[in-house]
Image (cartoon, rainbow over all chains, first blue to last red; front, side, top):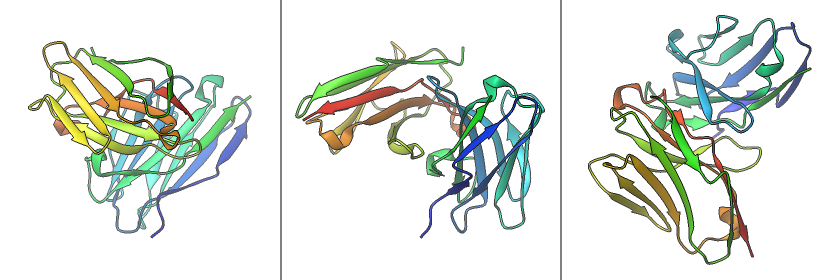
Length: 114
Length: 113
């Protein structure tokens, strides 16, 4: 069974541009979580989607947004990129939320803003 | 306070030795304390977790020790093996907002053969 898959693996963008990151959850999982892992820091919760709806978001500005599609895959959009947005973005999925202890993580998308 | 402070930042242990990673928290409302293991190029994977009603939990070579009064918990890896080389994260959360784990900064563990 395929795990959580994220694309692209690496993404390089210029400051001010927009980045779109994608996540495909494990088959049957309806909850998707997004986290930011900046260098030297632990993961910070960004967004939680469940059954197509945004259920909660972390302490990030509105230029971080996303959505969950009917097939439960998800997209994270970061607008007006800033240098400090450079980080590893991790997606996780679980059968139901909000129990991330039952979630599996993808390998992440490394976003570099130059 | 929402922080979880993890130490050390990096750790080198000889094969067969005991690896110890420590975490401290301040929010007494936290009631779920997991440890995650992350290999390079992979996402974190849940290793072991504890709730504050017990002081110790053991799974194979991995043990969590929990000190509620000191608001500290630690991961012990017995008989450390080169395959244990990874980054370890502690985290904490309130049970009803489990997805909003507060993560430590991570410890890069290297086991020398």
